[in-house]
Amino acid sequence: MTSPNPKEENTHPNKTSSITAQILGFSGLLPIAAIFISAILWPIFPEKELLEKLSLLANLYAGTIFSFLGGIQWGLSLNPTAQIQLSKRLLVSVAPSLWTVAALQFASVQASWLLVLGLNALLLFELLDPEKNQRPAWYIPLRINLTLCLSLGLLAISALHFV
Image (cartoon, rainbow, N blue to C red; front, side, top):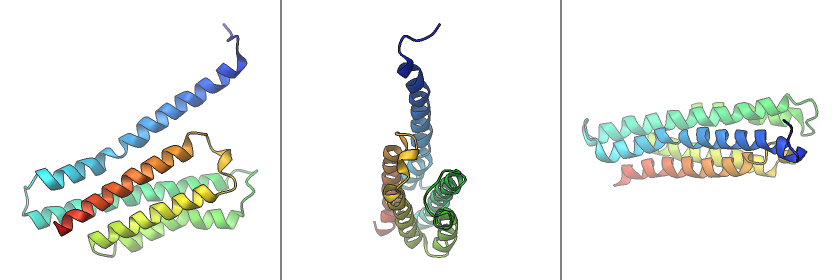
């Protein structure tokens, strides 16, 4: 049976992918929330030792997400119709992994701040990207929300070191 409105057929898969992306994206914030809650409520280790371990775990997780976002840039560079300078996008695609490795050499609080800086710098690159309209309509709003939540989560965990 065909739909009376051909546009309706074209938007349904996009709506489904948007919902799936949002569910998966926001569920990806659960580990950061769990780490934050654990740091506050679950003192199994001496407090400072637990906080250090949890902060490292949060930074490793955020670094993994940051590297994944770099992988998206790599994937975008494979598009044969891409207009942006290929070398620029490829450079941006590997920067998150390198930035993460460098950030993890610092103490956990500084590493968190560096990761937040990197996540937001990549978001700025994506917002200024002249080809951003080639991504699904849901991508940029989701990316902004997830970056904001992940950044706030990392900053909240790092703030516990000063309490």
